[in-house]
Each structure stands twice: as C-alpha cells, then as structure tokens.
Image (cartoon, rainbow, N blue to C red; front, top):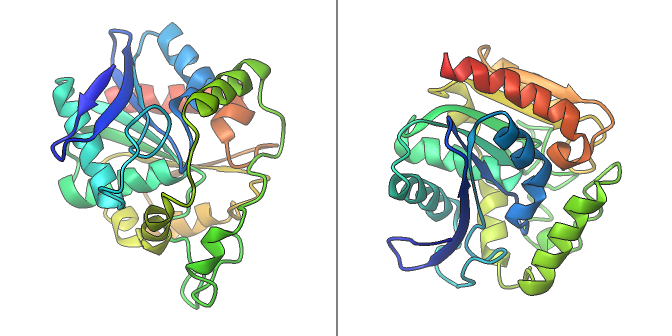
Length: 262
C-alpha cells in the first residue's frame, strides 16, 4: 500500500491484523521485510501490525528531500494519522529507534502508549561524556567514517525465509548508501539522552549480547538516565536482535506489549 506524506513523498507500507496496533520501524538501509518473524508472531497473537519502508529505503520513494531524523519522525506521525491510529506500541530497530526518539522530541507521547528500542544507543558519537556510541566513532572521524563499510551487523545466522525476503526486496529496490549519506550524518549526530531521561511513555531498551555495533552496557547508562526504563540483553544476538533471536525477542515484546495496553 502507498501513503503520500505532507511533503509529497510516497511511502510503501503494510497494515495487517485487527487488534491492538504495533508499528515496526526499520533501521538505516533496511527494508520492512526484516521484520518477518516479528510480524508473523504479532499477527498470530492477535495484534494489528504496521510496517513501512522509510523514505530512501526499500519500496518507498527515493528522494533528496527530508534527509533528517525529524522528517522521518513526522512521516511516522502522518502515517499513523492516516490509518486513524491514536494509540499504539512503536518498536524501532537501530535508526528506527532514533526515528522514534525524534518523534517523542516533536510530539511528546503523541500516538504512543509505549516504545521499544532495539540495539540503538541514544548517542552515536563517543566523547568524554559518553562511551557507548557506535563502535569507536569519535568526533575526529565524524562524518568521514560513515562512508566506510559498517561491517557485519549480525552475530548468528538469520532464518532463510527472512533472508530470502530481504534479498528479494533489496534486488527490486536497491539501497543507495551514498545518496542517503546526509541522512546518515544527521542520524549519527543526534544526542537523545534528554529524550531518554524524560520519556513520557513506558520504555524498553533491548541490546544484542554480541552486537558488533554497540556495547550492550549502554543499557546500564540508559537506566542511569531514566530509572523507570526497562532493559534487556538478548543472549547470542548481534545488532538485528529481532531477526537473529526471534523466539527470545518475541517473548520480550509480548510481555511489554501486554503491559502497555493494561
């Protein structure tokens, strides 16, 4: 299905199921097909599930417009409005979590009853105030390092059905890293620690025990920022926690989702 944003960009989305709504927000360069195990579980559990490709990713329009987290956050708000969703749980993976931090910065709780962050530190650049950024990225290497290959994101194999779905989507709609470079800069530049500290909805941060991108100890730092935040390390998982360890993640997701609805 297609949705047109207020700045006239076409987004590709799926809206399935009839229960309590959950929106799944993908990471940088990823297509919505990466959520296959999560979506199947949620649909089988009676949820309504919304997935979409961000602008410049997957089957959505590729454009120079809106190459910033704030615009991506507005896209989420407008998509939910178009679907008449006023209450939902948002689950953001990597940059998708940053998109939802941007959403909270703009709209407060907005349409959210809760938010799950999958393996995304609130600050990407390491400095004297923060030691849990993306790999060893510092201001000295920023932004040039973002042009380099990011390296393998996973620690274990993802199931073949999901890999095939992602591969087919990427073949049809290749991701252009260079064309989206300005957005990667904006994403990496952000510092969401104030949003974490003042999060207006129940918040769960999940990290992969073996994530090649982020030290899972960033969860401890999140709890210092916000003592109400829930955290969970998933064993034997890399950056794509929900796809690498779907059974473990789905159990965590289901428990949190039931809590935000009560």
